[in-house]
Image (tube, rainbow, N blue to C red; front, side, top):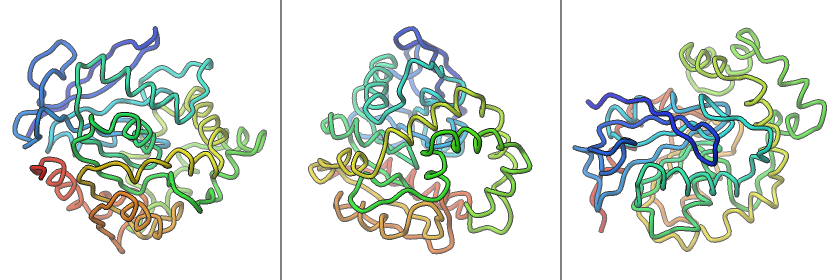
Length: 288
């Protein structure tokens, strides 16, 4: 299985970190499709994490499929400048610049949670998307209302105070609702989050949520129905943040295959590890 390689670069003078696996050639590690993935027409798997994650989230996927996994601005090891508003549109701009940096034209995109910002890029550039996988993603759809924690983050002062309470003890407690497996989220996940949960990431999270009321989310997905690519929606139905009906709603608007997992939570592959091979198999399958 391919091993992930760490990369550092700059976009608009800001540091960016990403991982690649089994990519042939190129100083940036991404000038060709990953060997052995079955990717079509040079399309490279692109994995986009959400809140409060970073590219650590995708190591098991990269080991099976190869591909690219950036730390989005404001997260992980990438830059967290106070000059950014951390909006959906800014993240779509970032993905344009990132793919130019690594020299990749077409991608098979996998998005989780706020990795949904990749859907804004996909609607701008549908010709650059080979395949699409949506996993318990923030709904760019009508009818969604933010969950309890998000409503706290969206509230000035209260959100800042809540951020200041996050530590190993509180994260263990709060994360018990996130998965279907008994107990908190895995220790490796908690350590990855806390290693990078600095003031810059906290600011990015608050700005992202505060810039995204329900009408903005709905508007961000207005052209999803025009994407004409093979798509798979994977949905852990015991997600405390996003109701299961939005998995079906995504599948309907995308004309996608829907894989509903009644025994999985917001990070479904942590409850159901077999989900990884299901996603990788779809990403590497031939189109048409």
